[in-house]
Length: 257
Image 1: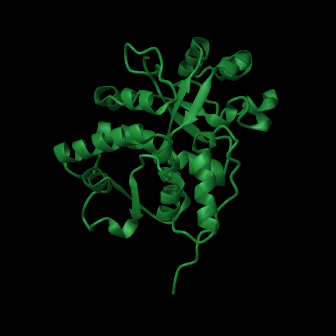
Image 2 (image 1 turned 60 degrees about the vertical axis):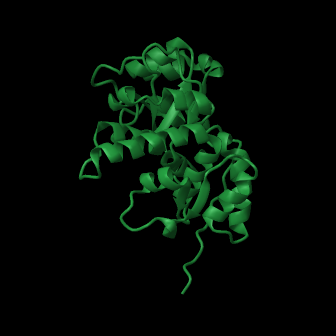
Image 3 (image 1 turned 90 degrees about the vertical axis):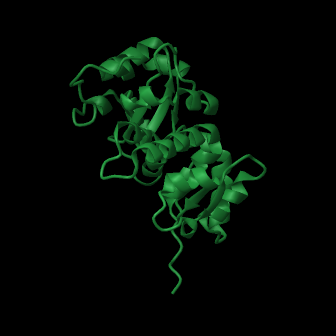
């Protein structure tokens, strides 16, 4: 018996979290609703762009690591679910950054092998790939974020967010925002490497910032994304932030920028 096709959700591609994937996402969802598999829909959505080849999950040989296969063949095994759809859409939006992540993962697998633990670099790469984000914002917002001073970040600094750009990179986080948006959803924002002023939320800049030594130190700042002005209508009310289960104070010194 052929398994039932997933029920694809309605996604407002104008929303800030989804806008970077919007053009490809609209085309891919239209194909999916006509019965295409996810790898086929992503190929159609890519058009003439220099995207990787999306192939069915069955193309991944038994025993070969997913990241190694992509690095060896240039093809991305893809399952028929929303998680892999968003993974493919991030590949289409940020091909340089995704290739850099894959290169670092594959190199680390060759160096360390596949064991019960990934090691600090692969842990950081996976965290960013699944749940990462990039923020370009005025210095006072960065200072408040790194200090986890949520009132300063979201209330006193609210007007400054008009000068900020936040891009969700992690495909697991995008999936959660599409299916079960909730206050506690938290991005891991990548802090810039030493000597860099910031990371622009653009493909080439993200790829350049993915430096192994920097990533291995896990230079991430947690950001509850629905607290960002304009990302959730409910956060217009100041009481939204009076939730210590989500907007927690810092427990340790923030990562250096």
